[in-house]
Image (cartoon, rainbow, N blue to C red; front, side, top):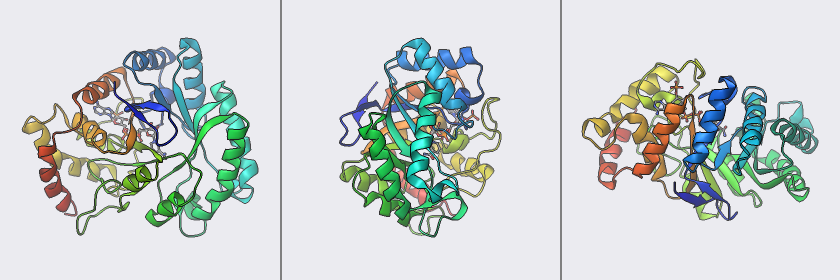
Length: 328
Ligand SMILES: NC(=O)c1ccc[n+]([C@@H]2O[C@H](COP(=O)([O-])OP(=O)(O)OC[C@H]3O[C@@H](n4cnc5c(N)ncnc54)[C@H](OP(=O)(O)O)[C@@H]3O)[C@@H](O)[C@H]2O)c1
């Protein structure tokens, strides 16, 4: 396993991170022995970063991850996230503190390694559950208080929502890390968008964050599963995935994902899912590439993809051609 430093924190994260979210769902809806075995195997494979959030299964993911890690006694790094609903946004500092305490109780830990603010960011006044960039200031004060109290080692935010707001967030001193989308369908966090690109243009937010010494954790590397090229969902996975920053619906993402099939047909990768993981691993500045896990087999496949390293540079020109045609 390769390890990469999370920005300027000094933390060494495995290049492949274990996503404990609801989409893959193993840590939310799996049977306890299957969760335990997957986490144990991940540790054997050298994975040391586990990403959860209070929202995943309404706290179930934190509770399950905490129980498994206690049982295994595994010395791994844990990141979790606090989400504020509209009433919480009226009392931000108090709510962040309270939600963080609750997250630690569910995890059964005194401290996490990274505590993120989970809300998407908007430029307009708090529409649709989004916070706005100005809200990040009181959020940061609360996160820093938790850091002083020894309840988190580092603090982060969610680089999702309106591009302008995400860039405004990056302008704020004090956050150590952030999470954002990066995948074969939408690589604009790390590459210039071609003309008429159909999806949200993140305007190279990953490149900018890395340049500022912020740690970047990549999410939705498989577009929630669409980059497997199949619409079929695993039984423990979320049945309906809402795309983030790609097509309006999952079926359209799957159809677009198949345009990358040449990577498999021409022997550059063993499967589309493998190509997707290796594509994200190739982006400089990303500290850890998260994969949402439904089964032990998916974990093994992700680790095998990681072991093969980034996609060959020779295919990047071909990828550019696909990106240029994605609007149709
Ligand atoms: N900061 C945020 O707001 C945010 C948002 C989203 C995610 N995250 C984090 O990022 C993690 C990963 O994101 P995600 O789960 O949303 O999406 P993802 O990693 O892009 O997709 C996960 C899905 O990919 C499919 N998959 C995984 N390995 C596969 C393989 N080898 N072959 C075929 N399909 C495979 C599975 O689908 P099936 O189960 O249907 O097979 C799985 O449910 C989450 O667990 C969470 O920790 C953070």
